[in-house]
Image (tube, rainbow, N blue to C red; front, side, top):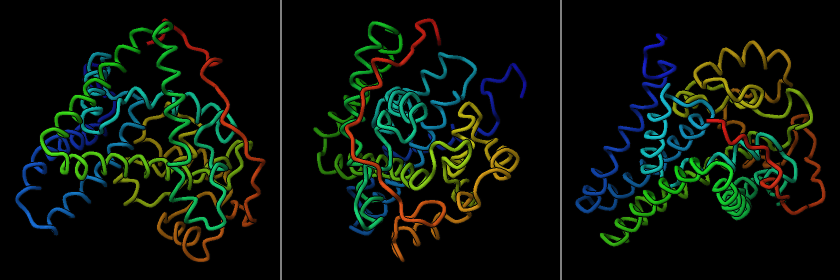
Length: 312
């Protein structure tokens, strides 16, 4: 890639196109929703839900490896992502980069899979997001409050994104509250439920203390094309600064030779069927029942996190 190029990796032209296409679909679907029958309405909601999930995977990638070489362009793209997603993109940083990645599966990780403790694994998969959401919101609020003093520029970006998101939701709620609930609120909640549910099957039953067996990866081509290689989770945790387009190659060279074969899954559908439906048992990567540690409260990681005020 030429240094004169606006973006760092050519693969992100597809990222940008996907987001822009959804930004166009958003208002068109709003108008069409009032003119079609119930089958059309269901189809539009389903498209929104799944597209929102894809946008969530894009956000995950962009907060790790920004698309543009220019900080101004990256901030502008975050506004666009925030507007179409319905959440301040900057808020993903504390809930993911600084807690989950740094404190994976410990009491400092609000998304540790051991929070789900039901006997049937399908229930664990289904309710995982709801078990985590309040601690995530609490830590995000605390992080934003701290950043007002440490990095006011970041806090202003977050505040502006939140203002944009809130304004859109209020306006749409006033215009048509039913369409707002079905086309904005429901897909937004579905995508959050889906992305946190993804975390569940990527980590549950793994060994967070092992250099390679800490994550479960899914290498199916169709799933990874749709989700911008979100299935390659092991390499992401080892090298979270690596661009998503490089995951397959890095996985083959640096993860697959070392990770346990059961953590290098080909088909997500087959895995979910076995783990959640039939036989639906909650097993670790060695095939043994998952041993849950004593249940603990989520620890406060915000106060102790090291933040460089000069870092961009």
